[in-house]
Structure formats: structure tokens, C-alpha cells
Length: 171
Image: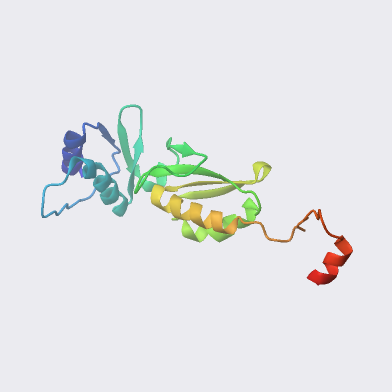
């Protein structure tokens, strides 16, 4: 890992702090030179494949075991996920129609075991720590599920007709 991390650091100008538990081998095979813009996302993917994650610090990047990633400060967002790929993030989803507590059971199988999902009943919110790409997928699922159930009556004001006559026609 150290050789690849050092190379990516030189390419991107980033400083890395590597946890002592981060060990293993990473092989990068490419038929052409890797563009600078792809070096860091590629490192994140390689680390994720080995069970490690990057956590952005103040002017540096920590590389830690995935299980420890969620306890380190990660970017937090209330709205749509802006990051991409293998960046660990925490996202808050405030639900309008469905129960956050009930959705935990639905979404839990979609989140890796090392990452978390929790319901906060006071605001009917879900708090999920996961990788950016998976958070985007979960956001689409929540958006699809969190639709009005259609159980509320719809009131339609009638301006130029008799409600009684119109009810007979509609029935």
C-alpha cells in the first residue's frame, strides 16, 4: 500500500496518514498513464476492495480500516449527495410521508455491515453513513418510497356547478 499511496500523494499533492493496521498489496494495472484526476478515486476504490477507507482531515487524508471510518469525521449532508464513488459520507434524510423507524428495516440490507443506518424519530429522519455512490442509490429508493400514500382525501372546490349534481355524474 505504501508505494501506491506515496505515488498518489505525489501525483495529487495530498498528504496521507496511514493507520498502522492498513496492510496488504495493491496492484494497479493500466495500459496507459493514469490521469491525475483519476489517481485519488482509483486509490479509494483499491482501498475499499481491501477493506480500508479514506477520511478527509484538515489538510491531510487518513487511511483507516473501513469499520473505523464511520467513527471518524466524515462529510455530512442534508441534501443530495454531491460526492462520488468510494468516499465515506454521512447523509441525513428527512422523510415526509413514511416512518423513518420502519424504513430502517427496509434499507438495512442495502448498507454494508461496517456502515450504519439509524432513525431519529423526533424529526422523522434517517442518518446513514455509507459510500457516496450507495448513498445516491439509497436516496433514489427513499424518494420512491416516501410518496404520499393516497389515503388522504382530496378536496376539489367546485365553482360553477352543483356538488350534488356533480357527485351523481362522478359516481
